[in-house]
Structure formats: structure tokens, C-alpha cells
Length: 194
Image (cartoon, rainbow, N blue to C red; front, side, top):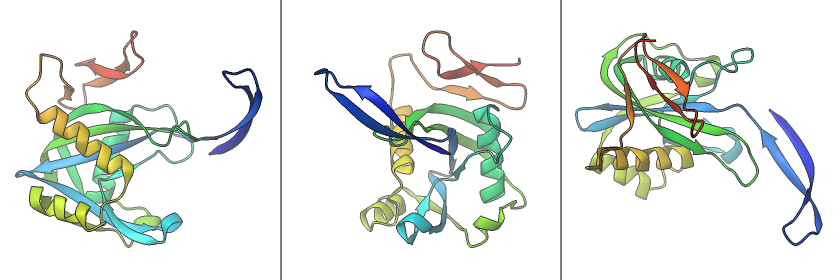
């Protein structure tokens, strides 16, 4: 992570200073099973509390530039012990574009298989649960889910589940499928069997 201050010129021509936090993008995974989702809860130091969220994280130092799909699979396995037969890319979110460049790649994980947890030391107190739609809404209403990326990812999931006009998110069936940036919009898209 780096913090910088840029000298800028505002639209009215006046000079200004803009502070920017640069952090690498991360991946967030929505593990869906039996008409519900898996969530994790952990203590978040900056806000001084424990909250539920979708599994998410970034590569450790030295892994920057690797595929978001690989990161999503790794975070799912690490935090929940789950692996997914199918991963669907739902989109990229700006985390806090008023002051940070960081983005979040959102994936839907389905066809889940249980395995061993692989949590990092900082995740030792992490808890996990499955929540159906009613439980999800109750957690949001009670202020137990307040993570902006988790809430925005849930909105992307709702859009994904709606009937659509032929445009859709892209599925990833396994290790042979990769993400590539589309030359038109710079966002990752499927390139199966590559």
C-alpha cells in the first residue's frame, strides 16, 4: 500500500491537492449453496468490531498481477475450506474511489466441496456460517453485515439472478479456464480452455 498526494487542476482551473491510497485489487467470493450463502466473521481492527462478510482477500506480497480467478479460489479455500466446481465472474467494484484506487473482483462460487481450512494467523478467530435469504436480511438489518463490498457483491448477485436480455456474467468451469482483459473495456472475461 502506498499513499500519495497529487497536485491537480480542478475543472474551474484552480489548483488543488488530492490524496490517493494505492492498494492492489482483491477478490471476493460469494459461496452459494442450497438457496443460501456462506459467510465469515472476523474482528476488523479499523472499526473495532466483528462483522459478517463474504470471503475476500488479496495476494500476499510478491504475488501481484496474478489472475483474480486464482485469488478467488485461494481465498475461498483458505477462509472456508470450500472449493467450487463453478466460478462465475460477476464484476469489478471500486472499493472507495473517492480516495483509493483499489478494486474488488466479485465471483459466485457454486458446486461446493468441503475440505480443510487454510487460514492465516490473522484469521485465527474467524467464524463461518451459512445463511438463507431471511437470515441474510436479518443480519443486514441488525448491522451485522456492513462491509460495502459484501453488500455491493450481493447486489451483483441479485442482478445475475434476474432474467436478462442476453448479456450475462461468465462462467469458469475449472483450472483450464482463465481470465483475460477484454480489449474493449479492460475487465476480465472468460477465455475457456486456454
